[in-house]
Image: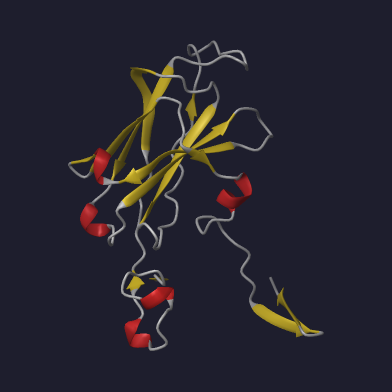
Amino acid sequence: MLINILHKDYVDGKAPTNIEYIYTQSKVILKQADVEISSKKGSVKPAVIQYTYRLYKEGGSASEYAPLSKLIYITKTDTEGYAKEDTSDKSIDINIDIDETKTNGLDKIQLIRITYAQSGQQPDIQIIYDDELKTFLKNKKFIYNDGGSSVGSIASYEFLQSETFDKIKPRVIESKGDYLFAANI
C-alpha cells in the first residue's frame, strides 16, 4: 500500500493527522515489456539493451519498476558486430500490455532504456519517454519505437536502490550509544 501525501485534497501539502483522511493507493502489478528490433530506421547505440517502465501520477505516487525486458543485442548481422564508436541504423519496438482500469489513477509513464556498452562496467540508464500514458496507448497496449534518443538519465545507484530490487531487510533494530542500527541481517 502506498500513501499519497501529495494528494490534491491535502491543504498546503500538510498531511492530515486523522487516519480517516489519509488517501492510499493499492499496489499496481506491471507486466514485462515485449521488445524486438524494428524494421524502422533509428540510431540506437550498438550494445546490449533492456527496457523497463513505471507508472506515476504528477506530484503523487509512482509504481515500482516493471520487470526488465529480455536482452536485445544490437549487431550488424547475426555474426558481425559494430565497432565501439559506431552508431547503428536500428530501432527497437516496445509493446507493453496496460489495462487503464487497473492503474489506480497513475496516468503517466516513464520508459527506461538500460544500455550495457561493455561487459563489467556500469550500464547507461536513460529515460526515453516521460509523459502521458494515453499518448501511445491503443487497445490496452502501449506501443513505442525507440530510435535512440532520450529525455533524461538516471544514475545507476538511484535505479538499483529503487523498490523493485531486493533491499537489506533487518530483522532487528538495535540501539547503542544513542544510535540505531540494523542487526541480525
